[in-house]
Length: 138
Image (cartoon, rainbow, N blue to C red; front, side):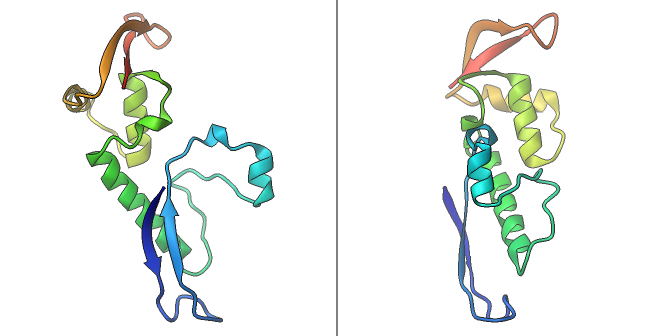
């Protein structure tokens, strides 16, 4: 979890002066059961389809998303969203989902090859193609 920003403009709320500190975390949706979600009347939304929120909460979400995308480009913070062993196509789909952009396959593979903390395993995932993709782990 990371603190994003503290919001405290005088006119951000119509009825009182409120200060809010915002935090964000990258989590697995599968770890949150329906009882936890319903307890707080929470809902999941795709990152590109955040609904209109009260006060300046859309600004909070926008700032958090921009910061997350910047950090994903520079630090290995998305790997906890993957299984212990994963393929390059799975990793690319994850990055494309977070960054909301299509990444060039060759450039992505070149950048991943420079990540010294990743290890290519001898095992292949044959479910996606005839040739298969080697599994990778941290």
